[in-house]
Image 1 (cartoon, rainbow over the protein chains, first blue to last red):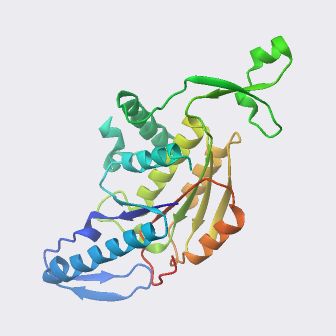
Image 2 (cartoon, rainbow over the protein chains, first blue to last red; image 1 turned 90 degrees about the vertical axis):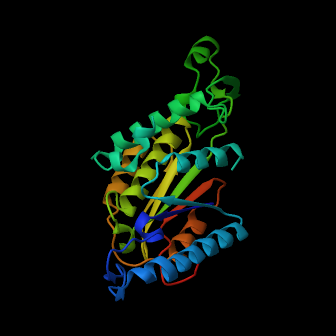
Length: 88
Length: 194
């Protein structure tokens, strides 16, 4: 099993010019965020989240790939061919 | 070739069918030049036909001469099956510029399906989920399977929240065979059920 983790560039390294109101698209919860938070606390949190997901996936014997929506698609296709060759 | 794999360029292509073909043809052309993958269609052996085999692989010339039914096998062609589990919950619609995560996930799924079915002759299937299983297409290589998969991807508009537990249970019930399972998600959800 492979996990393909899809993130927008702004989700992994948000760049805010001023304070912003962020809306949770699933719960509609709103929080106000200042650029310093995005640069420091948020980055640390998302990095931790990604690392956690990666290590839990690998711990469960799964492959993990982080894909950013601005990146080209060939990494995902390569991953599939490698798995195939490995005899899955 | 790289240009055809650029998601911003792809976001301008309206048909998933054309998009997948463009991506995979470009990708495969690149592979042929690289030594990493034996993307070979090199003839390896004949194997006797057993009921259920895809008739497209039967060597009809041989059949005409000998009245025996054999499949042509190619090196590197151990057919497998691939199932994509696609998260279509609301958070997938987020974007800071095209494509959205949902569209990007669709591009990947469509390209994987095309590569699997068209190039590798693997069976491919799809589960679309949010907090429930919304759509299930059983892995197959039947004619029309690609079109069915693409249509399901087109229908996969983001809504609701995410729950990984249900699709994974569903997956266990239906797909006990060997094969590759690819879970595409932003892993945005309140729970840690995975």
